[in-house]
Image (cartoon, rainbow, N blue to C red; front, top):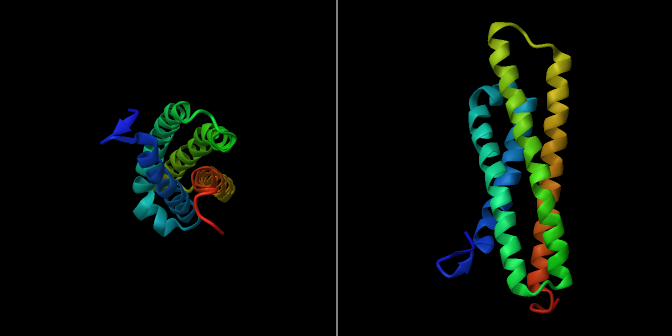
Length: 153
């Protein structure tokens, strides 16, 4: 998908990624740290993690199509470089969510060791923080590519 209703698809898809990645990361961290949230929100987190894991490479591909049409200015190159890294930052969100499902399902039969839960919580914190930071970096570079020289400071 390269365009939607005459607009580059990347311009539309990127807004979903910018919202959903930090939302998924925040809910994942909440579920990792708070068992009550885990019991209520975990399946939503898994669904969101699957969605961003699928949506991110589609957005990157649409961005590469758009980049070819722009003629490769250096600011767009930096944004594209950061964007191509995004799938490596959202995949750990899904892995962390699946590990939390393991904890949730297993704990119904027998207690899961605190060390295992703590390790998964650390992974969720790290992956959530890293994915959110990379989303910010990528989005910020894209905003600068679009708006530098357009709006006076």
